[in-house]
Structure formats: structure tokens, C-alpha cells
Length: 166
Image (cartoon, helix red, strand yellow):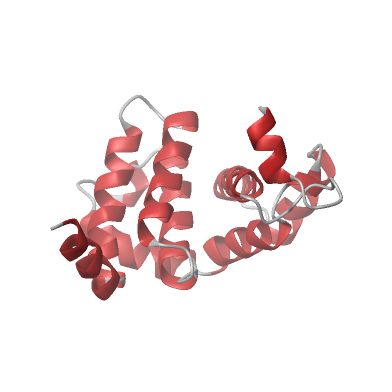
């Protein structure tokens, strides 16, 4: 971690700030691991959460509230979330890689429920997850689906951003 990242991640007393940008990115990564595990194992979200929390080093350096919200939101409403993005897919959900599937569940949940996070941040974070954990062009696929979905779920925000860009 660079000095800049350390400064951003620490509060006034030098303790980690669990709401920093890096803490939120780590929360999304851990939630991705959890949804991926949930998809493959069939275990419930509570079991997956306990496992991840027991196996994760430096748990105090993640935004735990975001992690839990994303994991439980994506797994608890998976069918409803799939219903949002499935019409935008070029192939059936069953043909998605587990990573793409998990990222789309997380991104869709965040677009629908975390309205304080700008839609472009949600999409960019999903792209970064896909680049880091997915296949070669998975990030392009994720970007396309979530970009289309954002115009359906957050039309006013998307239009305002487009108008601002000119």
C-alpha cells in the first residue's frame, strides 16, 4: 500500500478508516468471493459470511457494513436481481461464468439499493473486479450489461451525467 493509500485509509489517530475508498474496494472483493462461494457451494449467506470473516486477514481494514450489505443483498434477492439483468444478456444466465454472474448480482444490487454511490462508481468497481478476477474480456461484458442496466434503474442520474458531459 502506498503512503497516499495509507493516509486515506487512516483516521486522525492513525487507525484504519473502514469507510475509505480502499476499505470499500476490499469489501466488494470479499463480497465477490462470498457470492462466488455461495453460487458454487449452495451454502447459505450466513455460513459463507462466517467462513470469509474467519479466513480473512485484516478484517478491520474493510468496510464491514458494505461487505455484509452486498453479500446478503446479492444472495438474498438473487432471483429478483437476475430478473433485472437477464433481459440484457446475450446468453442465458446458466452460461455465465460464476465470476461474471457474481459481479452482475453485486453490481445490480448496488445500483438498486446503494443510491448514495454514483452509478459510474458502481460500474467502475464492477469492471475492476472483472479485470482482477474474471476472464480476458469479462470486464467488457460486465461494463455493457451494467451500463444498460443503469439507464433502466437510474435514468435521471444517467441523463444528468450525460447532459453534464455535453
